[in-house]
Length: 281
Image 1 (cartoon, helix red, strand yellow):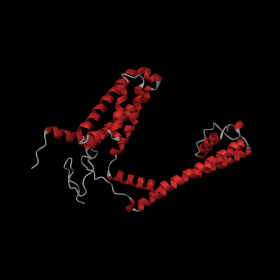
Image 2 (cartoon, rainbow, N blue to C red; image 1 turned 90 degrees about the vertical axis):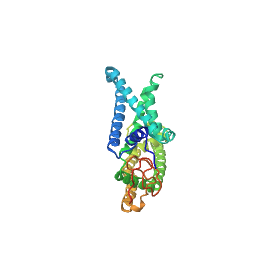
Image 3 (tube, rainbow, N blue to C red; image 1 turned 180 degrees about the horizontal axis):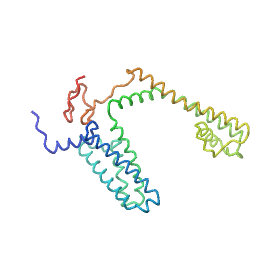
Image 4 (tube, rainbow, N blue to C red; image 1 turned 30 degrees about the vertical axis):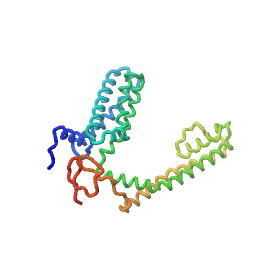
C-alpha cells in the first residue's frame, strides 16, 4: 500500500505542474507570464541604448531590470527544486540559457558594462515551443523536420553549385572591371556576385563597362530563379509528407499530458510522476 504524499511533496508536485506543464490552465498562464517578462526585459535593454530615453528614465529602467532578474532567479531555483534530476536540468541547453539570463545584472555589481548582455534573454524565447506543445503543432513540426531532412542532399548540391558559380562569375568580373572600378580583388568580386545573386544589392560596388553591366544583368535575372529553387525543393518534400502519413516519424518520448514528464515505458498506463492515466488507444 502506497504511503500518502507529504505536504512538501504535494507542494513540489503542484509547482512542477505549473512550471513544466503546458496543458493545464495554471501552466499555460505561467508560460504566458514568463513570455511577457522575457519580452519586457528585452524591450527594457533596448530602451537603455536610446540615450535620451535612458537619461530621463534610467533609474526606472534599472528597477524594472532588477525586478525581472529576481523573478527569473526564483523561477530558475524552482525549476531545480521541482525536477527529479537537478543536474540534468542545470547542464541542459535551456538550463544554461536560464542561468545566463540572470547573470548579467548580478555581474553588473562588479563589472561595469556587463549588464548589456541581458539582451541574451532573447534566447529564452525558445521556451515558446513549450507553449505550442499540443498535437497540432507537434504534428506540423514533424512534417517540417521530415521535409527538411529529405531535402538536405538536394539543397547541399544546390549550395555547392551556387558556390562554384559565384567563384567563376566573381573571377570573370574581376578580369572585366578591374581594380579601377571597385573590383579590387577576386574575393571582393565574389562578394559582389553573392550580393547581386541574392537580390540584396547594397550598391557599394557596381560595374561600369558595358560587358560588366551585361553580365550583371544576367546575374540579377538568375538571382530571381535561384531564390525559388530551395523553396521549391522543401515545398515538394513537404507536400509528400502531407500525402504520406507513414513518412512522419512517431515521437520517441511518451509525454504526460498533465505534468509534461517524458520517457515513459512503452505501454505504460499511468504517468510515473503524477499518476495521470494515459489513453488506452
